[in-house]
Length: 117
View 1 (cartoon, rainbow, N blue to C red):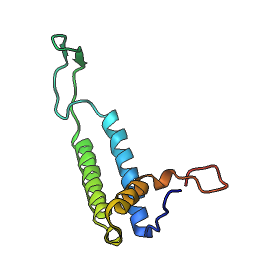
View 2: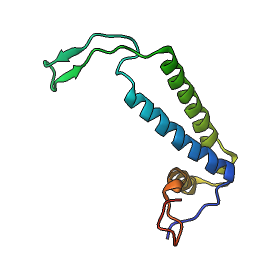
View 3: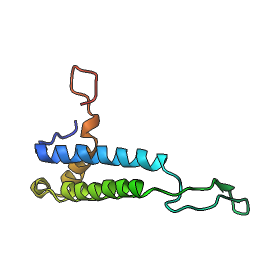
View 4: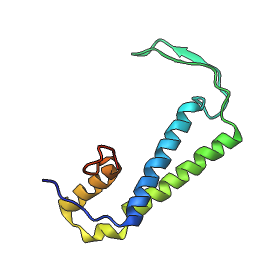
């Protein structure tokens, strides 16, 4: 049976927002052109695998600002979660297991619901 942890609500909220910000940043980066600045397309067949990229129009100032805003918030949340005072209550492998559990607590299914928390 795995241990249960009584995470403080602010730590849970910080971790949940961190997941959301990372998902939003990932989705944004997938939508944007491959290069921040305008660049010509290229094809390289000389390596161990073929690499091709279409021409990139680059990112707009607004897109760059949005990426920077999300990256800054991701960093703030990662620092908040990793340095939270709760971690001082745990030691050794228990702290490691708790940190791992926190990363997945949003995926856990409350008993009787069949749906993730």
